[in-house]
Amino acid sequence: EGAADVAGESIGRQIYKHLMNGVSHMLPFVVGGGILIALAFLLDDYSIDPKNFGSNTPTAKFFKDIGGAAFGFMLPVLAGFISMSIADRPGLAVGFVGGALAGTTGSGFLGALLAGFVGGWIVNKLKALTKCLPDSLEGIKPMLIYPFFGILFMGLIMMFIIAPPVSALNGWMVDTLKNMDPSARIFMGIIVGGMMAVDMGGPINKAAYVTGTGLLASGEFHVMAAVMAGGMVPPLAIALSTTFFKNRYTESERKAGITNYVMGLSFITEGAIPFAAADPIRVIPSLVVGSAVAGALSMAFDCTLRAPHGGIFVVPTIGNPAMYLLAIIIGAIVGCAILSVLKKPLKENA
Image 1 (tube, helix red, strand yellow):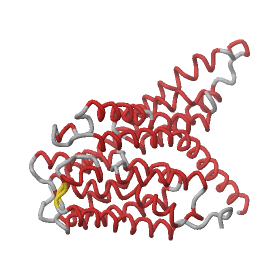
Image 2 (image 1 turned 90 degrees about the vertical axis):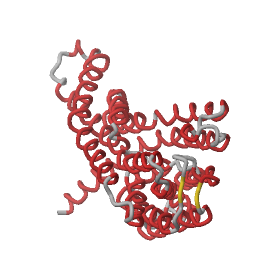
Image 3 (image 1 turned 45 degrees about the horizontal axis):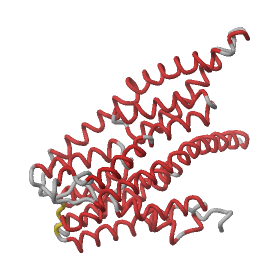
Image 4 (image 1 turned 30 degrees about the vertical axis):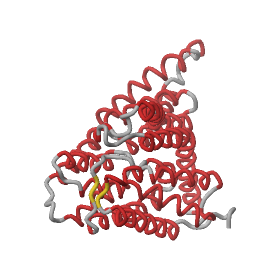
């Protein structure tokens, strides 16, 4: 029984190691890109074209384009380095392609996580299957066999196994939200607020966001407010937790926590992804509750939002701005409190 426990623990530790390899390589892209995008909103003029907010002025567009390019690498880098951790260098290209497909198929952050582990598994299987090849062909394995078959199988798995259920889930979420009775606003606020924190930039988050922006076009501004409140809470809750409960985080996590203040205030939910990826069981439920509280309060306070993005930089476009900021602060404190109770102090920091 003891041996089984040790084996189980070592598998868990291996998964954590692979995950952290992906997350640590992804983090600079999230932080650098996220802050550049935040600067784009800070320097832009909302009144020129509200639909194009973030890219209206040449300076804003400059920052938004560079930040967007950095963000574009987030999913491929996450999947690529998880895969490389599992299968060494041959896994990198296979994981990268899987992560890129997660972006194009709409399976997002969760799709990229799966792609990383699947990519490593594919390459290790290819290594095992090609062991019987003669030594003279050893050189063509990393140059031809692993990349060709690895990327092919990764494409097949992503396109036909991982992407369809995730995109179907996405479609179902959007339809359900669109058909909800608008009078059930507080419940709607809980739903869309909480959804923003489930996968932080992935399909569930995007389903709530797309619904909010879609309703803007039909003149409904309450849902967008709840959506943005829910999206701002996860990084802010992480930032508060790393600031006030330092002994629960490593030094690198505490440093990353500081940048989450900027991310949260800028409505860049992805700032919380590295923490969610490292400890999903404790982090995601805590953030979902905090975001749901913020979404519900935003509705209860009758807050409206006419911009589809921008965080605190679009306060002039918010109806009832003081209460809106209060809703976000309360949600962040609730998320921080739950997270800090669930997370135990680290032994080395205790």
